Image (cartoon, rainbow over all chains, first blue to last red; front, side, top):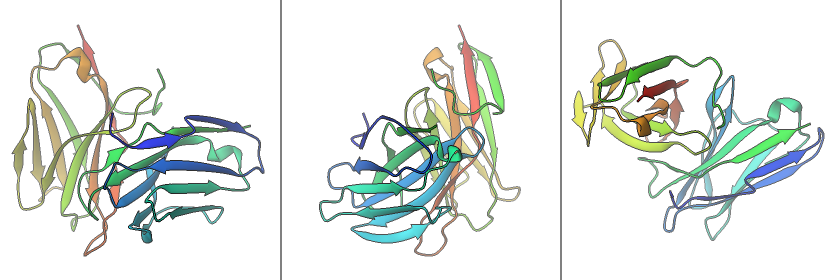
Length: 112
Length: 114
């Protein structure tokens, strides 16, 4: 158990809908990262927050947004969902800006 | 279990043999590298890391080798066990400066035969 909690574990929704994925980092970790893992793209970095502020951005679509709250939990919002958004979404946390990432178990999103 | 990739490089070894998993990284300016293990249905799990000022680092049953000249990273697993069966990812810090962004490779599927 990495100490990173993600909910929901599984989510099935329809195209055009909006979903929110939630992540609770390890106690004391200030950095939160979101990754998307699909069969053909591997692990793709989406976005990083450090202590509530956006720190780095990767290949995150404009339909996606994220934030980190004062209690350090983070949410990833996915809107106008398309079939291609079906993937595993991982959250990871780290105590510092750099270093080892601790991954959650992921949220599996299926868009029908 | 769930598959994380249909077209991954694969390595099949016998239990007790040594395994070597290779990775070519992309950015000559990358200063930090990590190997992760992902078992079916789980999130990636840290194995070992290495900074660019080193060329070798050893852990418990694992060794990471870094060759910056050819931008190559390898993970050696000694006395491979069935529990080592998983997808292994190398990751490099491509952020640069004060930024930090781990970019993952496609992964290698290791299968250990009993």
